[in-house]
Length: 75
Image (tube, rainbow, N blue to C red; front, side, top):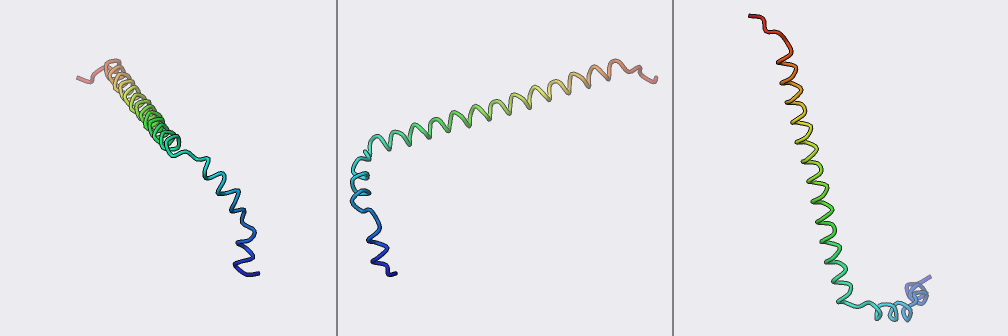
């Protein structure tokens, strides 16, 4: 089997016809919209992680404060 035999199997006409249907403007806008979606999704995840870290830290400080006040001092 030679390279020419393999190239004869490639449906060049179908590929060309479908490639002509791809519109640059729509493809570019879809990619840009996808980037904005990814930016928003990433920001949402980052804010959620920061919020959880702050809530966890605040709760740990509050419980530590409460435990420290509940323990009688050894004076």
